Structures are given as C-alpha cells and as structure tokens.
Image (cartoon, rainbow, N blue to C red; front, side, top):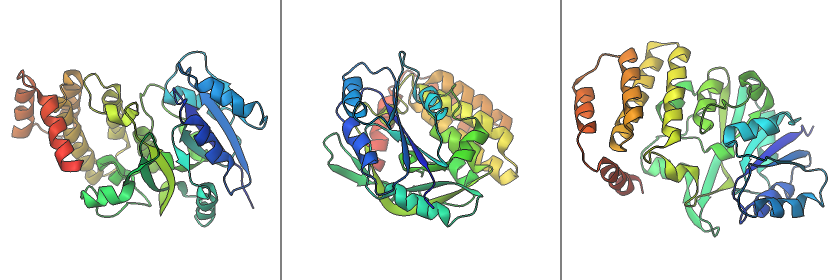
Length: 317
C-alpha cells in the first residue's frame, strides 16, 4: 500500500542548505522512504554537516565522492543503490513540503503504468528562504505557456520549458529503461524529458509541494553565459531528438527549438554552439533570410550578450 520511494539528495557546496534539505525529507508524512545523500566532492563544509546528521541515522545511505563528477554522473552513482518503485532527484539546497511524497504517490496510484512522471508546481525562494515567485504562475503571466501540458508531452517539451524539474517523482522503470542520465551532458532534465516523454506520459499536480532555491551559484543563473556547457548539452539533446521525431509536426517543433537556441547562441556570443545549431537547422530545413541575418550578426564585434541579457530581464524578469 505504501511503495518505497527513493530520494537521491545531491549536494555540491550546499553547506548552508543541506541540513534543511535532508530534514525536509526526514519529516515527510509518507512512511516508506529510502534516502541516499551524495556529496559531489564539495569544497566547503557540506560533508561535515551531512555526517553530523547521517552518523545518528544509519538508515541514510551516504556517498562521499572523492572527485567532482557533475550532476549526471553523481546521480548515476546513487541510482545503483536505488531500491524504490519511485525516485526523486533532489537538490541539497531545495526544500520538500511535508506532504509532497505522500501526495505524489497517491496521484501515481490513480494513474496507469503509461505514466512515468508526476511533477508539480513550486515556489522559488532566495538564499534566506524568502519567496521570489511561483513557477507556473510566472510562466502563465509571462505568456510562456497557456496551460501546463501533461499526458503525452514529447512535442510540448521540445518546444519550450514548463516543467520544474526538482518537483518530479519518476517511476524507477523509466530511469531503468533510459539507463539513468546521459553522463556526457552538463545537465540532465531536458534530455530526460525528451527521451522519457517519447514512451511515457507525464502528469501534473498544480499544488506547490517544493521550494526551489535560487541563488548566484545555481546552474540556472549561468544559462547562456559565454562558454556555457549547458548550451552545448542542449545542442546534443536536440541532435538526439532528430531521430526521435515521428511526425512532420514534431520535426517542425524541433526546428523551432533549434532556431531559438541558434538565436540564443548568437546573442550570447557562444560562437561554436551557434555554428552547431546552424548545421543542425540545415538538416531540418532550408536556410532562410533569418538564418543569414543571424549568421551576419554573429560576426559583428558588438556586445550581443549584454543586449540579450537586458532584453530578457526587461521582458521576463
């Protein structure tokens, strides 16, 4: 009646937040949880904080990595120990609300086995725990989405971001089918969404069940910075998606995504990625005037990154 849920808590230099994150798992109303804490070779006092907790709780698995592997490899190390029917990939600077796991398991139990993921709404908080904004409300207000897609979401997830990845509960079989995360990537969620949504449905819970930390060290704050490894990973995922598209409509959606990322690469001065996205666009469609204009702009020695950042700050906050 209470299937085991495995929570993989990934920590890298989260000394200030990891205790709150771990205790938010331990204080869940759901009774059947396996907690695995992974420290990805932190350089601050994270390990000491973790040991102070786990030394008194032998039921917690602690993996202390001796070299920094990055999110994808670190998660896969822990996934080898996962025993639960459901899995949560949980960052050590986020906070679970007490009834999160219970509500997600209850929702999963109402769904068919074709559903591989249940995700929810979330609140973003700052380093001090102060409310910043609500995930879904922000996307709806800024007209990034009209509704939160769910069900068979392969095409919507190709087009744009709408899932708050720290809120996901994943059926373990999905990760087994995918052989975990792709360790060649700098981040995991877009690749996971694209591959998983090809064969599994996603369900959305509109409730806020997680508080997601936003601070100057968050990976999301480095998006489209010059030399951003995440942008190159996005290219690799789009390259994979070419072979996963089954209809012309899906290919056209991927083309729109590739064109969007090409533009972002140009205006963030990531010239190598701009070239790669341009080549990928050529595989999907003939180059038009827009392509040649962007290619021309990318060669001009102007502060495109500053222009882009200013525009997006004004438009999306």
